[in-house]
Length: 96
Image (cartoon, rainbow, N blue to C red; front, side, top):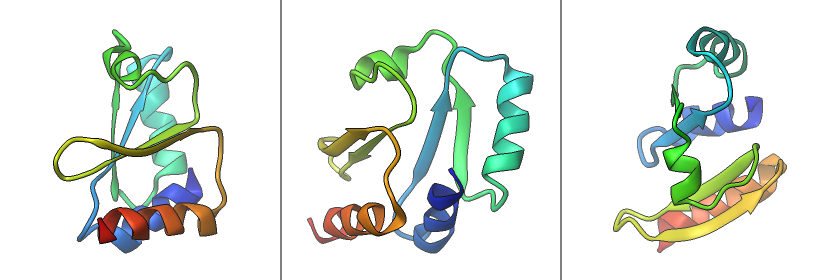
């Protein structure tokens, strides 16, 4: 998440970064967000009903879904990714 937070701070004027969490209490999620997302550039929330995860077919975390301005899924992946690969995907999203 620190890589996502850094990229969110860098691209915050062009890309919205959202981080839904599940299977945790709101307080536990808030503590993790404070620790892992210190810049405040990533909007986070608790998806208690897991609607967001179901909508995007996400079976576990971490997972990333890049959604274009028109609402279509551009790219998605499960698991962690290094900063260079994430940056490349964000740049491709911005070019589309």
